Image 1 (cartoon, rainbow, N blue to C red):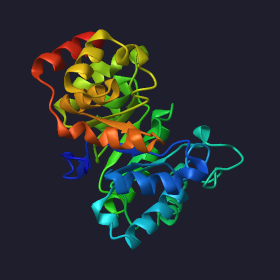
Image 2 (image 1 turned 60 degrees about the horizontal axis):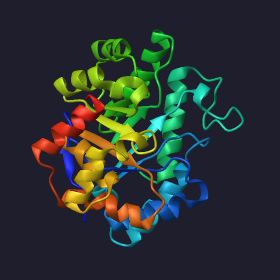
Image 3 (image 1 turned 180 degrees about the horizontal axis):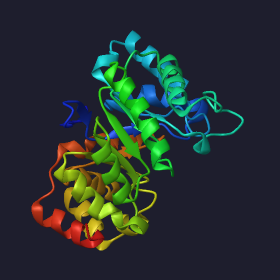
Length: 282
């Protein structure tokens, strides 16, 4: 089973379920290889050695090409991580360089790590507190985009709609992706997701299962899981894809990789979708 796609406003085909590679360390190459061979076609990484082994993703891509799975058949997104989100002893660019140069250096490292000449999305890992600096970084990302290095741009860990609106209004290349932690403390980004949906910005969720054990253990999901002979996680992921959210899953389990991909084998009726929406007030 291969993941289904959703079209972004940039015209990019994005898989509706993406394999996340954070915290995989030395297992990254093996896990990404396995995930793609099972059917994942979207890979999320970052030029942030603190949490990601981007070169391990590149090793997997090299192996997969040799097995007949071309780079062009995959959706690959990476991130520029500002210096305050990096391990100060292992920053993949010159932290003393001007911000625009940091972005350029980071992207060159990403291309080398991944063994590619373009990515499908370049994402800013988090907004910068100073908006002027934020826009310097974004404009440097726009330069990467305009040079053909990335097919679209995005922003992650942005939980303030005012900040997202200001970016959208100021940027010449609008964000096509918002990737956020999907959890109760942010109200599941209800207003932000509605605003994004109106502008055809794709909302990607991470921490989707880990942060929501109360949803997975709810009577609503347990009953749906029993009815459809699926796991609560499969029901929740399928629900999210029904409402236009693209979940990331970082499972290391063969069983869970296969189960995650099987969510496209069934449809949830409107009644169940509405019940789950009511459960989490989204």
